[in-house]
Length: 139
Image (cartoon, rainbow, N blue to C red; front, side, top):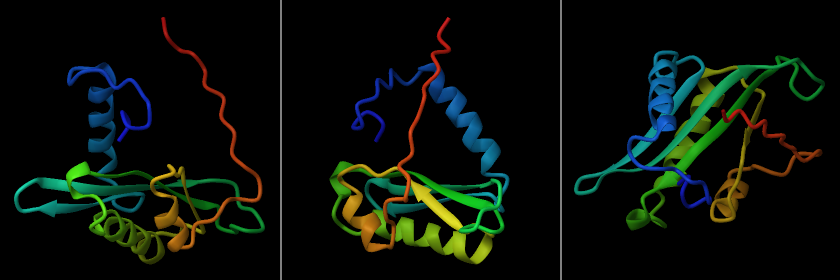
């Protein structure tokens, strides 16, 4: 997924992979704030996933509780695309947000490939577009 988004992911021993693995292991222990839903194929194994995390933010008029959900790592193996796997994973994740968290707002960063899926499930552009500043922390 990250490589398809144009990021240099490195090889299997890239430092970020070890850090990401440890991060996911820690988050998987906190089912009140983090969830991952997957689709499995009998021959290919894991073919699709969608992850979500909740975080506390300042309350606002549109999110009185301040609890915010973020969807990420929605991806499907290229051999299994257009079969509803990503939709099933994302719907399960959205059900988790609704039924098991206090999230009042759920966001995601959409690729062009996923835009129709996200819009069909009710996602829309926020009133104010997000901006990012990347801080170079390389030695």
